[in-house]
Amino acid sequence: MTAPEAAETFACHKISGGVASGEVLFSQDDICFYLCDPETGKVIEDGHCLHGVSVSGKILVFPSGKGSSVVQTDGLYQLAMRGNAPKAVVVQHPDTVLVATCIILDVPMVDRVEAAFYERVKTGDAVRLDASSGVIQLIGRA
Image 1 (tube, rainbow, N blue to C red):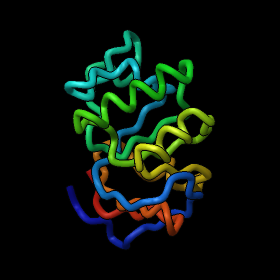
Image 2 (tube, rainbow, N blue to C red; image 1 turned 90 degrees about the vertical axis):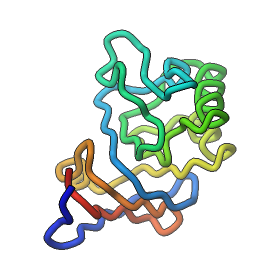
Image 3 (cartoon, helix red, strand yellow; image 1 turned 135 degrees about the vertical axis):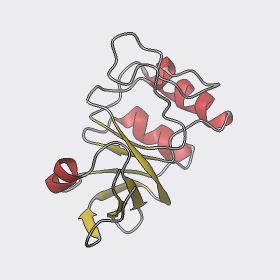
């Protein structure tokens, strides 16, 4: 991983406050946390673009949640109780269940990220997300 030439900063909107630094994991597909193995954090949903990849400890970037309220809440709760939840969530289209779950579990969550973020940042990049201040900073390139 290399440092970017000049630190790039992207504005975002806080949903659930907090600060997290880590590796980005991009998903083109919506996420159902119930279809992640709580013991490993790996996505187990057949046909998902992240099938076999762990969300554990990542800054997870994805379009939206999917599934009923029970499976979304329980899925993320089970991951968190085993230390395998994402460090933070960047979501394009938040839903009330996912929002409430992240707030309850203290998972930093943002939306309304500048379009340039999605053009510049990719899986493996290191970022610092400060949801409380509404800023995501690219701190290293994969």
